[in-house]
Amino acid sequence: MTNLRFGGYLLVALGLINMRYQTGHNSVVLHSLSIIVPGAFLLLATFLQPTKKFLEQKNNKVIVGIIVLLLVGYSFIN
Amino acid sequence: MLACTVYTLVSQSRVLPKYRAALVMSSMVTFIAGYHYFRIFNSFNESSMKEAVTLGTSQGSFNEAYRYVDWILTVPLLLVEVIAVLGLAKAISKSLIYRLVPASAAMIILGYPGEISSVNGTKILYGILSTIPFLYILYVLFAELTKSLERQPEGVAATVGRLRWLLLATWGVYPISYMIPILVKDPSTSQMAMLFTDRQIGYTVADVLAKCVFGLTIYKIAKMKSVAEGMKDDH
Image 1 (cartoon, chains in turn red, green):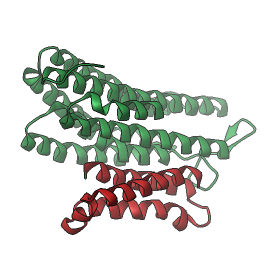
Image 2: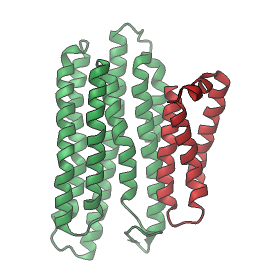
Image 3: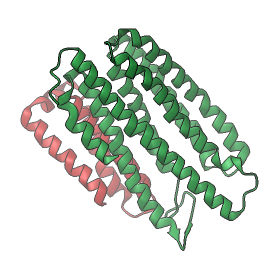
Image 4: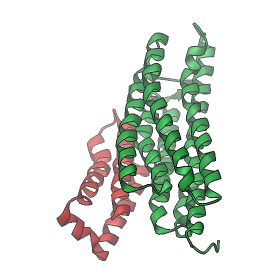
């Protein structure tokens, strides 16, 4: 759970730096918030009991991990 | 920064599980900083034309806000990382986090208006204001690290002792870099360019020292403590 929490924090952090970089560009919302929002949701989900249970299942953990990695990759190319 | 991230990530199996969170935090700090340097390079590239850099907050100009976004996200983690590796009692760790994280946020937020101002008086004022939480953090950390020395296993105490001085030396580079533009009164255009470059170099050196070197010291302490607590040293 701690690693997923760190993953959520990482996405929020990368998204905020990305947003600063995109400021003034078109589609800032689409580009940066697509990293920040999933990160914020993941961070929140690791603190709430029902979503925590969902994230504790191995398959869900793997899927969420892959999504985090894809979004980290996206933060470099957008 | 990114190499340091990879190193601390792959080294996790070399320490006991209770110290792994400190290494993950160290990896995150260096990864976020590495990403920030990737973007700051993009920004520098976009704002440069014919050996001149446009400074400001508008699109296409180089803005120091990048560093402050990076710092506000990584400095609290850096502090939690130190607390995690010390292996203090839960209540003491919590109390330290509640004191140090807001102080680090205050330090960075108060430094930003001075950073972007071109007026020396404003720079000095906000420099002094942000130095107050800066000194408080150094005092609390220095005092806690000193107190924790007696609880550390033999051999580890010396490294924790050195961590105190590393903390003081690396964090001390930031205010020196901040003060660089104030050092020359009424600078010419070429002097301003040089002061800008010097400050960027200063901040970059400080970042590498405070994030990579500090993270590697945290790893060393975690490894030494793991071995002292019975983990087989086979690496």
